[in-house]
Amino acid sequence: MISCVKQERRNWSRALEPTCGSGQFIQGLINADLDIREIHGIELQDSHFANAQKIANANRNVTVRQGNLFDIDLRKELHWKEDGPLLVIGNPPWVTNSELSALGKGNLPEKSNFKGLRGLDALTGESNFDIAEYIWIKLIKELADQHPTIALLCKTSVARNILKYAAHVELPISNAQIRRIDAKKWFGAAVDACLFMVEVGQFTTNYDALVYESLTAASPERVIGVRDGELIADIQKYNSIFMVGSGLSLTWRQGVKHDAAVVMELFCDDEGRLQNKLGETVDVEPEFIYPLMKSSDLFNGNECPRRFVIITQKSLRDDTARLEQDAPKLWDYLNDHSEYFEQRGSSIYKSAPKFSIFGIGDYSFAEYKVAISGMYKTPRFQLVKPFAGRPVMFDDTCYFAACRSGEEARALADLLNSPDCLNQIQSMAFTDAKRPITKKLLQRLNTPAPTQNKLPLSSAEF
Image (cartoon, rainbow, N blue to C red; front, side):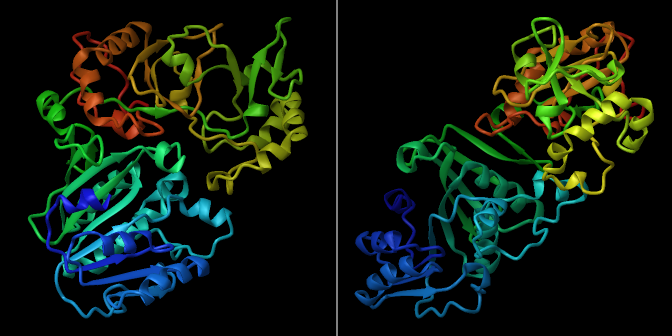
């Protein structure tokens, strides 16, 4: 990594490792031919700090401070002897705030909505962030007046999040690079990771990043960047195919979220009886049972659902207490398994009715839909028809647009599976992400209206 950084040929006279561990990077900088005359490290953990301090004791130009990075004001509390160009280098933690909290660690940043998320994003998974994201933003903001080069190992998703956030709040970064590393080889970690490097406050602000396949690659394989507030996976492809002008306005919906699959998701046994994932036969009112398709069903083109799902509400506002009168067998079944609902950790259920679900509305009961899996790299849209006289539901890994007729759904599926639309998606989607296709991405599709008179339902209608 240091060899890669050296290729930039910057004349850094100072270096900082913000989470220095036992001092591997500090020692690497000492050994490298970089003419760095002052090095600072920060470390919280006792044994790591002791090892790093041994390096500092042997080198007068090295200072290691024991402390929590999140409690240190880098603008005021780092006392430099040198005042030349600054290199920030290292390998901050690869965990999220919720993971670190679950481990019982105390070195968490102050709990705050530091990205300014709104509404449901602040309540759900969007509010969970990688510790490295917080570190990146802290470094850029607190060291901006020193115009540092920052080069850190991190998840590739963190690098992308920082680019998008920097563009959103206009942080002064430029010359960004993402160089992929084999995290499985080096760390035994099954995650997409990289060396992310940016210049801060030195050049004209730019929120594009060159993406290299390795630390040693001479030429970038593509350029990613922010356009209209959103991150684009391939700027060149995006510029060449993105359609300009007004198109068809589609409202995309996410499938049902219940977080109690062992109770809520059912299948038929060999004798045609419904069973849950606990192996129990389920006898409840049939009007609350709907066919269910999941990501693998959509991606593989399955036309017949293999599962069913219990739907307890028609809208988010429905009071599920009515089930005691309207569906006594279902009410008893749900209460017999209430522990599975009580274990649901998401904050969206905290003030919701008992046995409530999420992602449900009039649109869920449209007979015809066009749907796509969010979990696969290759985009593939599927027309979904009613099954056994019932509208098909999807789980929350899927996205769909509700349609008013089979004819309309066929026209929309053909349009979305056209090369132009698929190329748009591929220019915007990050295939290494856990969920390459998202609702936000689909809403950004600039889809031309089909020639048929009937158009898919707009947000005003559904």
